Image 1 (spheres, rainbow, N blue to C red):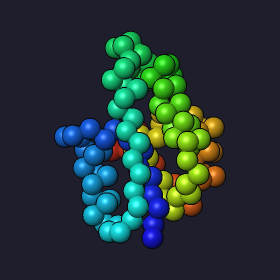
Image 2: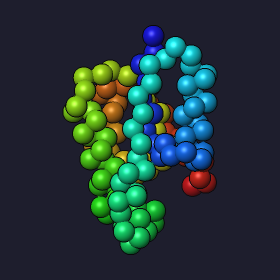
Image 3: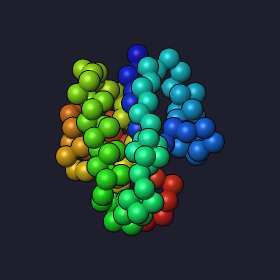
Image 4: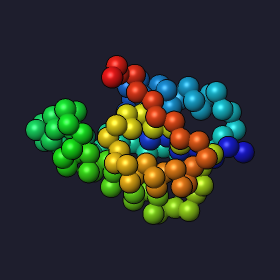
Length: 113
């Protein structure tokens, strides 16, 4: 059985949620965990969101990285696949932690560079 982790905005009506649901259909029988990164955005003031989108810094970005770190420290799961929507918000140290816990790491962004 495939053990997989999805990290991204998992809110109803978002394209990232649609991707997660499609991945679940493409990998029937996989054990999926989902980490919804919408919460740090929802809790951030407008100026913090602007910093996050423009320069990838600030409390919103810190909140996302803390959320991932908390998830990893609260479980001992090893993942065959870690799928991250908008991994540009993750610190290199967070990516390294994910790499140690996952065999395959995918960064997906629909945005042009």
